[in-house]
Length: 111
Image (cartoon, rainbow, N blue to C red; front, side, top):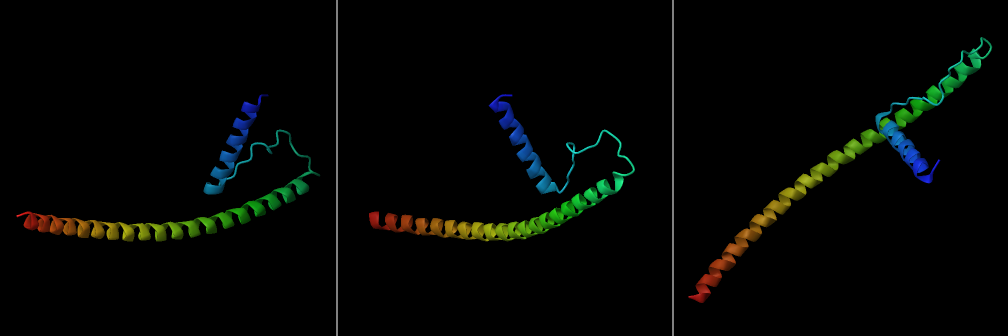
């Protein structure tokens, strides 16, 4: 393995984490079982899966709260941007009007 290949794998892993965080969808390909569990192993495996499921649900709940907060923040920021655009447009109009007045005064003074 070269360092380049490892870094690509690390990047892919990081991207997968971000996608999981943004979508809330988790798939486990590394922890799948190709062999069947014995009857004695089933209760422990079930408990382990329940714990993982609870953890995933808690994480998903936290992510949903964060997403909701970010959406509110986004809406607020878009509103502020809209207000600022309106102010800029008004100021540009006022500046154009002032420049027209200056031009008129210059014409009068040059006569």
